[in-house]
Length: 229
Image 1 (cartoon, rainbow, N blue to C red):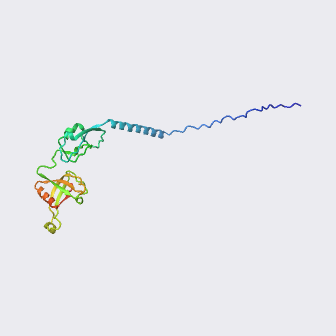
Image 2: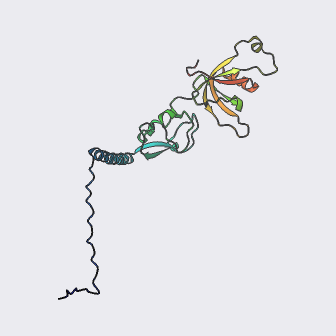
Image 3: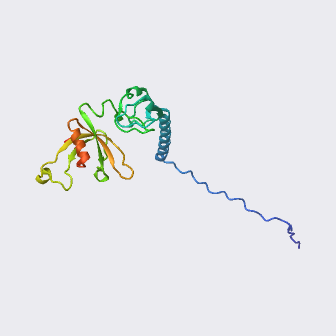
């Protein structure tokens, strides 16, 4: 009887299983709407950059103010400068090539250095016209309207009897005396006192009366309605 010989190698390596191939995942299906939206966003971004570049490149030369100009002062070339910037269509500014059109005109408002000059800030008319007088009126803080006083604003100067005096207008209830006027300039509040000085143009015949009221402390300033009534 023969024995079957089994060949066993003492250093034989164990068999290693072959790597398992992962299951193939099918590519995600792309939706046409998402693709279209992506393309639209890319196009919009490109258009925005293009507009920005056009605005930066499309600069306009405009007139600027280089030093303080008081209300009523005649503008000279030394008061004005030039700047080149991308101007918003809503901003009304005097173009640099039209600077000659504003030189020689008067400032309708107080002009500050570094600001753009707009057509509405200048006028060819004298702020005090023929047949008018300028009356300076000092207003204490409690007498200053909350509405800002600006050049051209119509006002009324009202005569208010002084306290402790008898006055026929006060006792009879009659309508107080008034004088029509127009603001030419209003100063800032004085340090310490807060008093604001308002230059008011009145008819030449009313100027002395308004000045007398102011000197006596019996004058008050009220704003007129927009239509002057």
